[in-house]
Image (cartoon, rainbow, N blue to C red; front, side, top):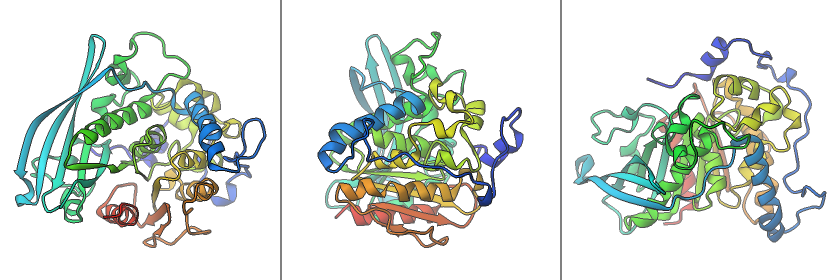
Length: 393
């Protein structure tokens, strides 16, 4: 079943303590925290200060107040090839289904990776990894079912490997059960959550890091040119995963909205209060302190995007996806620019929001597409065009 559209959530949610804003004239005045000012008030003027002081400060603020503190790598990670077919896609690709097993003490957790690698390549292939928050049929390894959400054949034709895992296999997308997946390797799901304990978004990113462990072990995949992509809640998770794991050379956020690419302080569309009411397991418990208090947050999402600098980051919106605040997504990408510039990377090369179908690509990329909340082949082709710029063949 296709994931519930945010508009439906907004329409059906009850006891909300706010009225969603859908008029730019109603967006309140706000001031964004400066990513280049240390907590002691000093300016960040060089890359050394960014990486040694400011970046760790911002990471800690997001861990404490938004996503929680995810666990580190498990004691052991094991890989088992469940299926390998060098004649997949009429001979154009090699299919690998991989069981990724994490071991922590006496506990273990396993989830499956689906991976297609182009056969017509002279060396290890760059790869797109999708954190799939929709049904497994969207990433069908048999290719009997094909979905524009994950247009594997088109990606293979462009020379990229394409992979996916089900986020619910890492942490169930349920407030009552999300700690029963990989989280249970490190804590007892029956015990009360720590205020800054990791939520499901952070857990899904932890799963993406275990996939990266596999990429580094597979000679057919170029782990140094791995792009992590996510849509909607998966896009929220991909941005945080890219911040936590610097091995990802590119991070893609598609229609990720509040808690993803959109600025909290705009209060446009979905908001902290809504998400903490209907999806309390996505974030840490501390995040609830900011229900209706966006200005009190010590961070905003331009700082999340900046955590991936100087690596490539792509933000994508859809024109009819008002709950996800396309303008807020664009502005976050734009206001991350000073950090990219400081580190010698190209910020978003646009001062104004572009028209639909007119992507802008620097080290930070952005496009808005006509249509609704979805991930489409059009989006994927923009992602691949962007990767072509940054993954030198």
